Amino acid sequence: MRVLDLGCGRAISSVFLAKEFGVQVWAYDLWINATDNWNRIKQQGLDNKIYPIHGDARNMPFADGFFDAIISVDSYIYFGTDDLYLNYLQKFLTPGGTLGIVLPGLMKDFEDGVPEHLKDFWGQDCWSWHTVDWWKKLWERTGLVDIKVADTMPEGCMIYIKWKEAQDKVGKNPWPQDTAILKKDAGEYVGFIRLVANKK
Ligand SMILES: C[S@@+](CC[C@H](N)C(=O)[O-])C[C@H]1O[C@@H](n2cnc3c(N)ncnc32)[C@H](O)[C@@H]1O
Image (cartoon, rainbow, N blue to C red; front, side, top):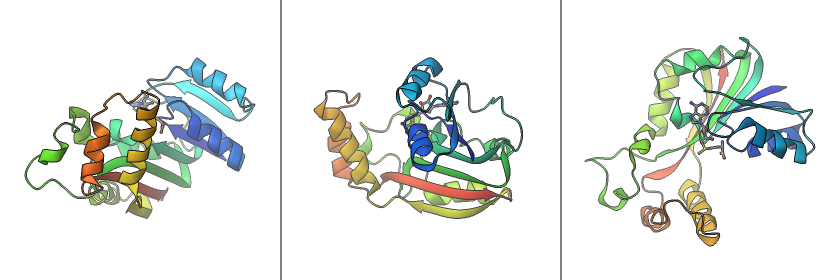
């Protein structure tokens, strides 16, 4: 299979897919240097399986119908809220191909602005966080895909807290206040959304 790991960051998910499933992966990212990813890929002995590419998700160099699957882990919020993006992205999938995303989001909408306990957490970047129903509607109404999964990750907030605690432990939490805020939230608003769909 040819898989696009869209917004792959340091290509850890690309390495996982190539190692565990033997698929070919195009590791595509904007903020992380392709050479750094290439060095990581070579260290893992996967240079015949993973191809790192630097680029913007909104301007990709691939042929229509090239990929059997596209995944996007914790990245789709940076480009996927555009009403027209799914139509752009699905062109790169073969008919019946799979699109799977996981992204931080809201377990329920705010009733009256940002809740008090989230005020020091909620940066301007967070306005692209939405509920699973919001994402489902965004995709469903296009008629372009059959949605197979649209749910929230069990214990999503707890996983987020564990990641923050790991960052705290090594002194690499860019927003140290977040750990306590997420613990206070305890998944009332913050968690992860998952969608899997097949191109019609
Ligand atoms: C939070 S990181 C997640 C990285 C990786 N998928 C992971 O889970 O570790 C978000 C990634 O989205 C990528 N990204 C943001 N905007 C992008 C765009 N327009 N095109 C491609 N990648 C983008 C960034 O380069 C960054 O590596």
